[in-house]
Image (cartoon, rainbow, N blue to C red; front, side, top):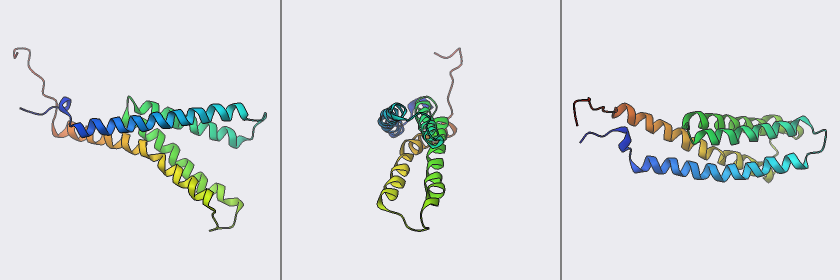
Length: 146
């Protein structure tokens, strides 16, 4: 019997499931963070608070898009994480001496890198799905075959 894309292996379905479960956890966490930060914000808020809210919202949006389109959602969310890491390393480090980091800054980097998990899982899921499509193209039955 010829394998089709509908007969995708269990591990690929499990990879998608793991990405979606982790995404749900991060979506709940970041949604609560965005709501609470919005409620606690002083008016007028500094521009950095709005940047944090917008970037967290972009991450949530990317994870939600990842449920339907793994590549687009993974790329949007990964773009947020990479931007947040660059911001944390370069722009946030201007207020201290070079090379002097405390434990909270290392924790923040670890946290930001852990946010890559659903993004990478979505991208891997998309990649392996496309690879299976190329190796095992869909076979369509002709109208005369039953």
